[in-house]
Length: 443
Ligand code: NDP
Ligand code: 2IT
Image 1 (cartoon, rainbow, N blue to C red):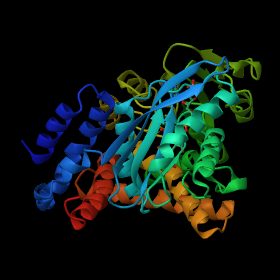
Image 2 (image 1 turned 30 degrees about the horizontal axis):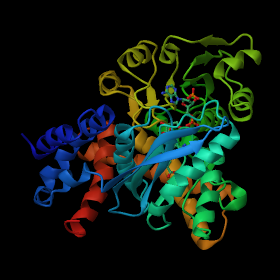
Image 3 (image 1 turned 90 degrees about the horizontal axis):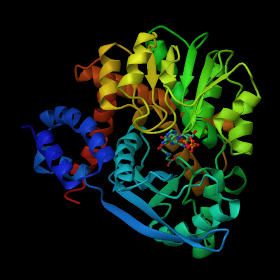
Image 4 (image 1 turned 135 degrees about the horizontal axis):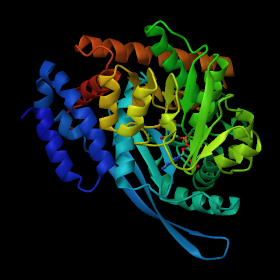
């Protein structure tokens, strides 16, 4: 058994009943053995045992009062996974499915993603099993304030800087930021994704979706193609999906699908994004309301979004949303590119199908790194008290996405796995964190 295999086996035993975290480790560790073969001193230094064990996992109670006057209690977490190369950085997710396994898989992935950005940030993630759906603004505020009343102890501009993720957008960040400021009496850049008028960055809202498309553009370029005239299937209808769709359209592609947890819409004429934004951002409604805007569109409650014919698929909803059946449909219908907006969108079986069928595939830890990259630009603007223009942010974002692509492509090639961007991302993300851990001793 190799060192990586032994560590993986033990890590699976140490984290029983945590399928998402086990899946993330199982996807990453075998690739890391290739680095260990080159640097056997990493084993002596226990790099792999340390990299799979979070520095700390904070778990706490969030009591809040609902509109009927009843006390509700949710569970919340913050994982400070790996701080070798900078302060912990990563989003907060509010979704009923949130548990320790999901937070740990996200924090583990974030460590590699943040390293790939080339920026000085460590891996962190957090969230709660709170369900924002159907809650009033006042209930959201009560929940956010209560959560921050505990979480603030662990945050700091040089310690840990959360942002948004599923269920956490500008509204939630605003309530949490206000409470942080009230408790500490200080205006500090401890959250990113803030509104522009009180310290946010232009371009942060668009960053993840745009960044995803900038990377996909590089993938297309490698194969001598462009977005122009392509058909794109996007899943999700939240922050990442919306801005990914917008950028695809700007580059001349037709986006034909979007979805939420209720089902998906198919609009053969090309999705009308103004309608989606009206439904999702203004009404906070459901994607099936899209039929009010275009009667020719179709809504499917059941069935696979990935069965819609497309050239490019961009999963932008949640983990494991692209499974073996979906991958087989994409192959059958001639899809050639898959890039992940969501974290760990694709199951290992589906990744195998994509690779076997020469579909060019980029994992989320590389392809969705634009969001956290612009978060660091927001931190930089907060620290210097000087705001940047949208053009400056967007151009830096593009540069970072191109650099990540070049790094993961080159790394895959260097390790004899040409076009395996998953392996390239795992290894390139690891190389820097491992070196930093070695230099800093057994901490
Ligand atoms: P949003 O909350 O804005 O949107 C999430 C979308 O995905 C919604 O349409 C939601 O539908 C759908 N969705 C969520 N959970 C499920 C589920 N279990 N089954 C089916 N559909 C689901 O989140 P974001 O757009 O911010 O995040 C989307 C993905 O991108 C996540 O994986 C996140 O980790 C990742 N990501 C986000 C970044 C960011 O900057 N925001 C950065 C990097 C990655 P419904 O409303 O019905 O729940
Ligand atoms: O998964 C992610 O990278 C995010 N949700 C964004 C993290 C951030 O700190 O901006």
